Image (cartoon, rainbow, N blue to C red; front, side):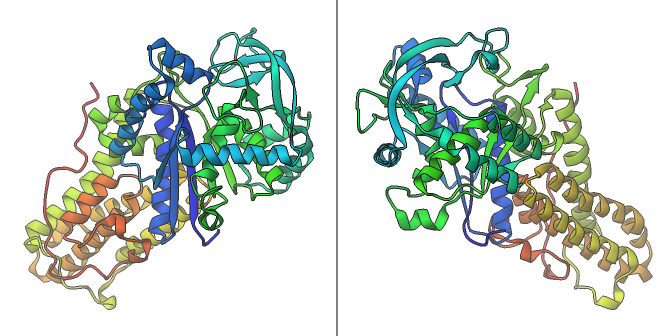
Length: 514
């Protein structure tokens, strides 16, 4: 793993409508990884943003009687407010209508043209406006776009082309020799299978509309929206404007994308970077689709549920935890209200929330709410060592899962510690110890261990349930913010004796299934 800046991105989202659960799924995954890396002491740069050019945006604006920029200016705040509600910690938010993006994009394309990588030709083929993508008849399902179920338009016009076919062998070699270049493995194999069938050169300009970045060598054309949009990952970190910063941050460690846009990110994007002699992203990770009633999340199919609809009941923490834990990351998964209630109540309200409530309440009842003296090593028993070992193991497993880009497995590992702590409570029975004055010292050792367990859990759960972790940190009487802490603070024996704990309402109130 690199020790430099950890650079993670989401796709930049197309703003023809407001965000739905599928968009938030990708963004929460990226945020979890970014937060975890920060807590490992890494310097992180986390980018998200919006894709605002192209024919689909133009038509959406026209339907509303607006100019494209009026439409995008009105809709972008609907995206940023969702990320704020979900506690997303992006370091930057880029819009493709910004000058810092448009200028470098034009220079990038001009440079490719000067190198002979771009030429003028004629394109005739099928084009889906909603995908902003070309299709062959073989790609269609019953003559319709496989993603949107609409009939593509037949387009014939003079376009500029990028010599994509030139890079097929280099791309095949990269993906055959680098297992992490595309993840998960099934997606890498899919791309390799398509690459082995060969590549055609890519049309990279349009003349049928004018909403986009002008082609510098021929302003009667606008740059194809995907060629424009993909460059956000470099323009946002200084390409064409701050080369020193660009050299520090690029290449990206992870591009998170949905599997429907993997081709653009694993074929078109790296080929353009190769043509410019730039480093390629370390990993493109293509996760599966979220489905409702067996259909992919989609506004056009009325399955595009807003994150706000769920946060009203489950809060941002419950929302974040459910989608990362319930659905095996990388695979398709189905959302249902019933499964969300069950996962929330079982894992958050019962396992974690009840543990926090019980421990703080027992320290309040038996020790006047004050952390006791640190126990010495010779007072630690087997069950205490087992508890401590469980936390060490959980963090080790979480770190390995994050390295494998598996939020689901990371949370399973974390809950191993949660459940071990709950089992420890039952094994040592503090309520029984409290009845025997001769067991006073043992009671203090047990409750100290449990308080330390909660401190460790605040650290371990902060990347996924940041609001609850921050509140637990506060109730434990700890200084500063948990988000400023690192995993170096994990372990037992550092919680200061005499620290006063504060009881409160349940961190995760139970939700009735009905």
